[in-house]
Each structure stands twice: as C-alpha cells, then as structure tokens.
Amino acid sequence: MPSAAMMGGAGGAPPVEVQAVTEEEVNLPNTYIGRVEPIQDVELRAQVGGYIKNIHFKEGADVKAGDLLFTIDPEQYEARVAVRKAEIEQAEALLDRAERYLNRLERSDARAITQADLDTARSDVAQGRAAVKQAVANLALAEFDLKHTRIFAPIDGRIGRTVANVGDYVMPSLGALVRIVQTDPIRIAFSVTDKDYLKALEKIGTDRVEDVLRIRYRLPTGTVSDLIGTYDFEDNTMSADTATMSVRARFSNPNGLLVPDGYVTVLVDFAKPPKAPVVPQEALLTDSEGHFVYVVDEAGIVQRRSVTTGAMPDGRVALRSGVKAGERVVVRGVQKVAPGKPVTTASAKEADGK
Image (cartoon, rainbow, N blue to C red; front, side):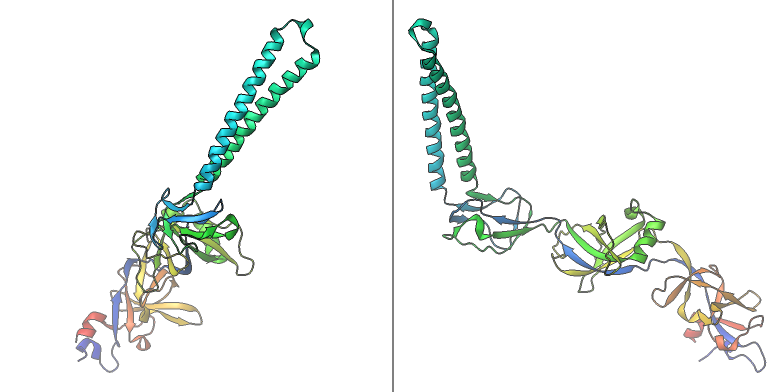
C-alpha cells in the first residue's frame, strides 16, 4: 500500500520518491579480447643423424630446463671420438720425430748439412704442428656430435606430442621432434583501440601503468581471476588495418588455467579507483539540453541540475559534475515535478517497503 506521503492531495505538492546521492568508488573496467601466448617456446630438432635409443619424458608432462629428453644411439659417435683421439696421438708422434730431427741438424756442423735439408726439416716441423691442431679440431667436432646424441630441455615448460619413437631414424632435416611451451609465467596479448591507448598515454604514460591500472582476465567460464597481471610491453607500431595497439601483460599461471593459444577477456581498470557521486539510473533524465536530474532541497523545492555522466555500473550512473554526495534526487514521480515547485517526498526504501 502506498504511504500517506505518497498519496498527496488534490492541488497539493505532488508525491515523489527520492534517494540520497552516494559517493562510491567507480571502477568499470574496459574489456578486450585477449589471446594467451607463451613467453618462451622452443621446437627441438636433432643435430645429428641416428636411431632413437631412449625417450625420457611423458608427452604432455611438465619438464624442467636440463631434463634429458631423447638419447640417440651414440655408438658410432663414440667410435669417431676414439678415432680422432688416435689421430692426435699419431700427429703428436710425427711432430715429435720432426722436432728431434730438426734439433740434430741444428746441432750438427754447418759444413756437414745442406741448407735444403735444414729447410725441409723446419717445414716438416711446421706441418707437424699444423697436423696436431687439425687433429685437435677434428676431435672437438666429433665430441660436439657425440654431445648432441643427448637432447635436453632448454627451458621449463609443458612438452607436447613427439613425432619420433624409439627405433626411429632422425636427422636434422626431419624437422621438429617435439615442442616445449612455457606455461608459468605466461602472457596475454590484447589489442587496445587507438583512442584508449592515446588517452592512457596522455594521462599516465607507459612508465606508470602498473601503478595506475589493474589488469585481470575473465575465463570463458565466466570466472574472473584474482591474479593481477603486470604490464609487459607493447608493439612499436599501430596496426594500420585496425587502428589498434597490441599490448602484452604477464601473469602467473600456477593452476594452468591460461592455456597457450586460448582466448580470455582482459579487464583493465584502476588500481586505486576514484570516487564519484552515484545516482540510480532512474534519476537520470535527458532532453535537448543534455543530461539532468531533479534535486529536492531541505525545503522540499525541486531544482533542475545539469550533470555530466561517467561510468554506468550495475544500473547506476556516476556523475562527474552537477550534484554532490548527500543531496536527494528524484527517482520516481519525475513526470509530476517542475523546477522551483514543492514536492512531498518519501525515500525509495520507505516506498518499496509499504
């Protein structure tokens, strides 16, 4: 049943419902479509040819940098290393013989040897030293190949499906054996319109983004994460096709909810939300002159106030100018009022409770 105050009398002050203007934090986020991408990912390839002897991981598992993933049969490469070591010993022996012969010639009576013999001996020593260096280099190459019969994870991440099985012959030209993607931390890339980007740049600059803005995400399930992202970087050019700037934010991902190449909704709002006068949506009126509200003063007289609107969260309107907290605005019965005329007021809560 309506209250007596709301009934009014014929020719009397018309009854209206009013509500006090409150000052609240206004933090309606901007939303963007974000694509999840790994900060690091790597495709592992065989550096040498050979048969896969062992696979040391489970597909789809998390691996750590340094974990052994594949073993290629090392037998032929171990044999090559042994051959190269033997070649070094042979080259060193030949050098030692050449140096001894040169020493004998140099200690001999100059009348007993020819200059040609001396030159040949010196040349043999130089060639022997070069042969030793070449043999050492050949050993390094053989050891390099042997080392690459064991393939290790270069980064932490989640390993995918491998194209090789035990017993398969692999070689560098085969392509990627398996891919590892980093999942924690991870990145979300999203495109910001040129208007939003330039507005943020004018107000806060890129150096203060983390202090002023809060970056979160909403999963396709509707869940909004409590995790706060950190601004990572932005592209160095604006997209000429879409007039947007690609921005990337970094998030921790302990539960693996952010899946590489998946899509989420990025929410960007203020880290420390500003406060503003807030009124119900029903109080905001519009005519040819713009937005306005009806304010009822302590004497019950109606005033028209032009207002500038801001964000509109949850059926409410934030006002940038025109009213202040504590003032009463008409929320029902606006068609009955006129500026400068008295009204009979009841609060919206009282009217709803009658």
